[in-house]
Length: 130
Image (cartoon, rainbow, N blue to C red; front, side, top):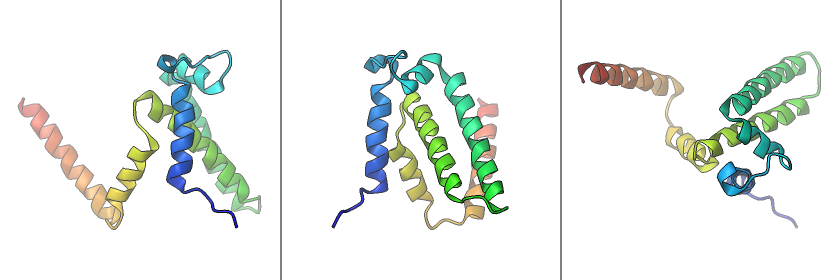
């Protein structure tokens, strides 16, 4: 019987590979797609995130009209991958995202959104007072 690795294990392993491609880790833009995106800077990988997000939407729309739903999974994997490149660039990890999702668990989405609005207003007020 085989066991599947946990989601966090899979993301952590992929994050390690991506981090090894960072410029300060010796990532070679000539030998690695990830290193090339990181070397080109945020505009390159942020553009890819936008493209991949659009492809997720298109795959979902196509699935609504009979196309293979597996394409959604494929496109979401591409989106997550490119988001992980952004996380690595900014010194963050999938564990940070998982911790945030865990923090939100059990909280109503409507409550979370309302809390963010209140916090943003307070931050704005505090910033204006300084």
